[in-house]
Length: 158
Image (cartoon, rainbow, N blue to C red; front, side, top):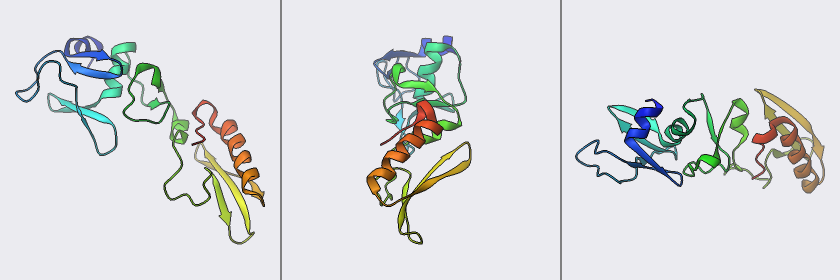
């Protein structure tokens, strides 16, 4: 897929792609492109090849395809061009609070041995043990500062 072909095939309107052509008998001109994949991204098939909608939107706008594209707000279906950015390995930190989190704060864990809250932040495949804290609120503030330091623009505190 290249920019010229993408612009022939699709209209981009407010973060969504719509077919400008009839690629199959099941699709009408003007239909929204794709389906929601189990990964949470909107994807589609064209000539037996799979594509992610957000990557095609990027291609249509900038005429290149970086290895990784990040959704700034972490919403995999918000494909507005202003919500997309080139990413690197720090992109993996732009995630929300895990569902199995027990402290209610990102990067804050209860250390049974020390009976204190532990702050651990990972970056560039390294774990940074920030410290132990008796107070959960202090541990959460320290975790926020550590994410800002190690994750920069990809820091996500939710």
